[in-house]
Length: 376
Image (cartoon, rainbow, N blue to C red):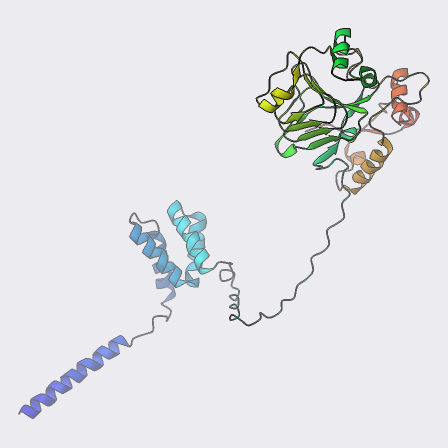
């Protein structure tokens, strides 16, 4: 009896063990679920990405990442068009974890794994990039250092109307006023701040650099010749002069300004920089605007051309022509309205000035075509 009972108990245990094992050895975890059920599960997990509880959101995101490629389509849809920003954010993050370079979503094979450490990678065939099209640079384009005799505008000498008392005071400072009045002059205006900052250089000791109305820069101004600042011109960067540097009217030095000497008018603002304030000589040195101030240099009867700071006019024209030829743009001769030649008449003074600057007024008057360009 005991033997029979023991046999029955062993049979029962074996049966239970077989049933348990058969239950545990079911379909493998990675066997695909029916497509509709899988899609429903993914959609549910995406909805849970916006759940109020943080833990549920984190778990849903982790499960989607574990599902991998099958979840990509619905994740892309959620990232693009779901109303909940939390769902969009988490869907984008899951996509980056599953498919960083987008190859799986596009149906491409995943990238091959990197070679083991110590083994050289297989050689890659590199297709050489096409050479960039050569481009002729505009003479003044994006220059950080600018020669003022190529950038500025020729004007008459600004020191021809200094009153007698001022002449005496200037001589007392070692300045040769007669020599000063015989120099060429060039004018700079405009705002050159921030990304437009440039370094303006005057290499010619016989050229006066005039900083006119509205001139302001964050860059440097360096001049071998005299410097005259007028109107509201001021330097936010630095100004280094090898000779006379003169601020008058409402202009003023701000910082790091040197001159030999550095003269400052009575109306000029006192700088915050102590070194500049200590070096400058403030007072009335007799500067007054001449009658021909800011006008082109006067043309003398016996001279063919006036003394100009800007001498390379022909060279600049050639550079400009080459630059225009290199541009792919709208042909103005076809796109613009034809009009009559606007250069039919010049007065005597205009003719003289054009000739002095290398232009032929007769050629301009004989041009048969002109085009009118308007619009924003």
